[in-house]
Length: 465
Ligand SMILES: *[C@@H]1O[C@H](CO)[C@@H](O)[C@H](O)[C@H]1NC(C)=O
Ligand SMILES: *[C@@H]1O[C@H](CO)[C@@H](O)[C@H](O)[C@H]1NC(C)=O
Ligand SMILES: *[C@@H]1O[C@H](CO)[C@@H](O)[C@H](O)[C@H]1NC(C)=O
Image (tube, rainbow, N blue to C red; front, side, top):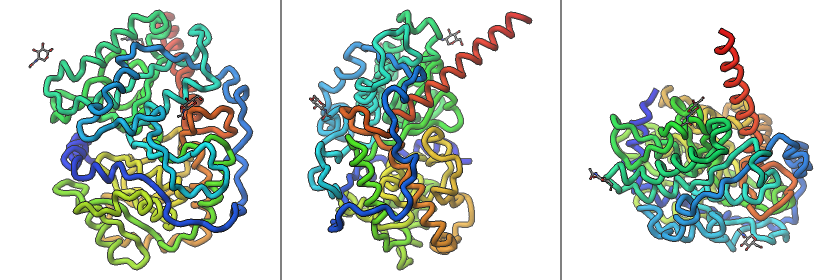
């Protein structure tokens, strides 16, 4: 088992060199001349089912949104050029976090209004989540009716503005003020915050500073006692210590407003020509444990005529060209997902959106992260190759062993997974399928109900003894 701190240090060591890759955007490069194609596979009835507001909430989800002082969310955006020490976030926080519209996308249909494609930043889920919940049919304005209390803190944007702040007191100050604010609320006291949650667009490592570990700019948010009573949604949970952490998808670039836009895209991905057996898009890593597996992937991919390699060192311009990156994914059957700078990668979600079957090398890249979103049978939608296993094992040979029919079944499954992993446009209402926010709220409501019930039972047992 690799030490998470070591992982995290690797994250920062290679942070600058791969920052641009991390933000690569997607414009599929190929044009389909066909009219909207018929699905090759029977359209799964679960893909898009008629879910209306009433059946969706139905007393199960009733979410109250705290009206926080502006310093915890919208106020932070006023200084958007300093929100991240590496990049100007102003273009990325536009449109409630969707970012800038992409105008040269292949929509595959005339139904491109409103435009569902945006150059969405990988670490911006907290803003999109907020915008979605504000406009969600299960939102309530009456705290006495609510079973979930959402604390819309832009903690990820805030922490990345303080990465270079040496003084821990200053770095932690806003998180500490949030804790004070929450505990002064009458709505907090009913359940000691057990029915409260926050959603964070960055990985949990950014909020779990330990005094023993090296200091990489993280704050103490997730170690605060009151936050430990809450549920924390994050794009990467700590698989060992994150018992109250739940993985949510990284946002990709597709934010449809209608189920027709979703169905059209899924059909296009079913029809897509995939001449490459597999592909790898990424940079070599220097001097860390991941270097070995990455170098091996680059070597094997480079040597195989069946692999499409996009090597992202020395500022390869293709790696900054979304058309290239996503164009490659939709022309590939399998997409290698080497652990990135931390365990998870946004690229996993780009790959699924492209109908490219992900190949994982760590269980923490997806399986231990996104339990609410991914089907339980891992082998039905992905391939797992043990990182610690025999490195001379040929990736190509392993993939070629999978029968063609099985590959097709897996791809069909991957494409069926797209809606639940998508953040639909926050202005959309009654879109007709469950997106990432719907799935998260439903799962969270059940989780909170069970947790409060357990606590009450335990209290009753303690009293009777
Ligand atoms: C949502 O609709 C409002 C009002 O029509 C508009 O001002 C806003 O820009 C829209 N949001 C996005 C993200 O397009
Ligand atoms: C950190 O900042 C706080 C608040 O401004 C200040 O009181 C403290 O002395 C600073 N600590 C160090 C080590 O500079
Ligand atoms: C967390 O919950 C426990 C009950 O399980 C409660 O005793 C404690 O005061 C809560 N902590 C905070 C900071 O509210």
